[in-house]
Image (cartoon, rainbow, N blue to C red; front, side):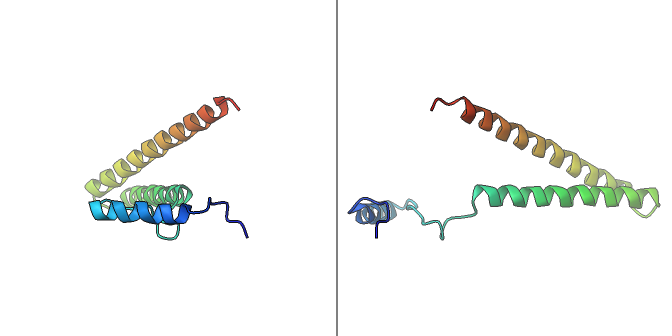
Length: 106
């Protein structure tokens, strides 16, 4: 059964990892040991953005009802504004990267 890896590559990776660990640097991690992938990070950021926006809406409604402190409302709305700016910046960068990939010659 072929794994798509050149013969001896596994030992080369192991040797590379051992050399890096001797130097105190992190080695190459397998996918199971690595952190979350790009899509998982974006999903988590999107979920946090929605929660922040909902919190700002809730604080605004409480302010209208007279149940919230003005400072809390300002903090919540400022956090939501910063979140929207961040999401917009990330979206613009993703679109720019996608357009750059489309311009690559085949």
